[in-house]
Length: 73
Image 1 (spheres, one colour):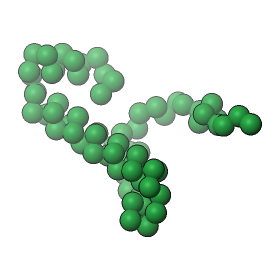
Image 2 (cartoon, rainbow, N blue to C red; image 1 turned 90 degrees about the vertical axis):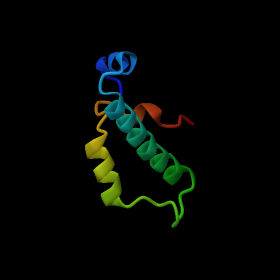
Image 3 (cartoon, rainbow, N blue to C red; image 1 turned 120 degrees about the vertical axis):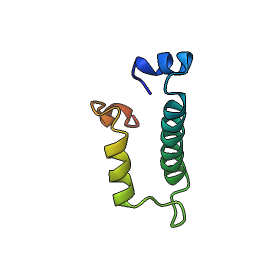
């Protein structure tokens, strides 16, 4: 969704259905991760396989060092 072509595709309605489908797929996977983290229990738990699949499909922010988000005491 960060690519510069997305606004153009949506604005000009070229590949509109594809763009909408991609957006909704990203949104569903994002929600699955958020709810899995927020309500970490057996019901909402995400399997390692599911997490790996999402990581392969939506491999954004690969270069972020999570140590920057560590809580400082």
